[in-house]
Image 1 (cartoon, rainbow over the protein chains, first blue to last red):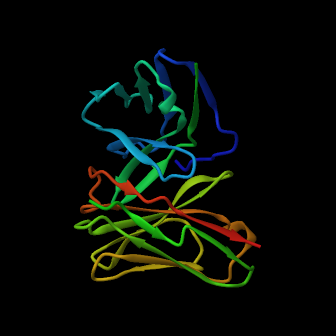
Image 2: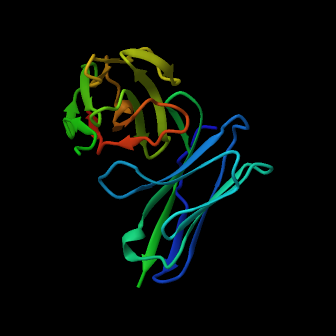
Length: 111
Length: 114
């Protein structure tokens, strides 16, 4: 379940298009999932979370989908903007204060 | 409301030395977690403290240690530094560190070991 951040996958998306970022998690016991955004030189910033008893949750311009059957999480960003350019991490947890992070996806928004 | 504050922001140390990093959580938050971020291994959990007690620990050697004070501020210490300890060290605070509680991250301390 540990992230193995070797080569960071990159998603290039045109401004205004929708983005979909995928994440596979490994711990079946995880019951809380979070998406974080990390911009250069900053710490991770909370975007949206979802509990294991849900399969979809919507926020402002973002939607998280959870498929427990295949242990898959996705983040959809609507009408992607230049300010959305960053590295996106999914994280899971099944115990106190411990987040297990995925490897991350670099999102590059082109004009 | 002030965010999570980490000091110092940047640090350069020599192999074999020891280092102490500090984290001040958001006011009212009692849980502090520490993470190491490297290009090769990504974000990895070090340990978590709640009310001055370590509740959870990641898979790091004993050279990595931490503590939490009564005001919830936390420090982590790395002894006998190795080149591989060069990383961004992040701390996160949350109200209670429950599984369903949002964690807020600081900007991190960039440690370079030479």
